[in-house]
Image 1 (cartoon, rainbow, N blue to C red):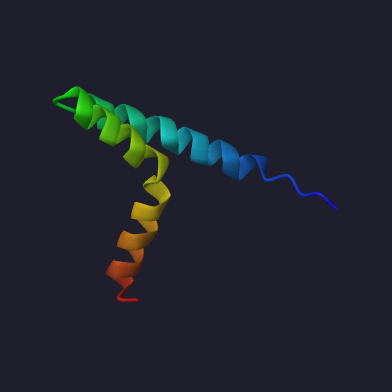
Image 2 (image 1 turned 135 degrees about the horizontal axis):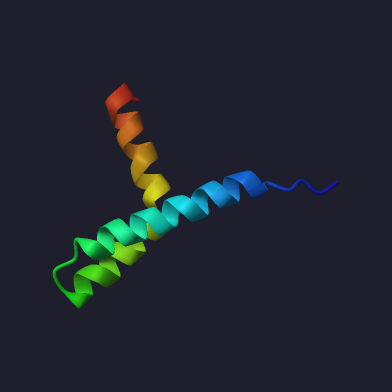
Length: 57
């Protein structure tokens, strides 16, 4: 049995694009742009970390 999670993949893809645009627009140097692109790849981890910190977990 194979399940398809297309909706979550699409949501992650849109979030990635938005995060990449945000981080790259705010980069002052090429190196900062590269770091921003890498941050855009793992933005859900930042989100979950901040949420758990806020909830005191």
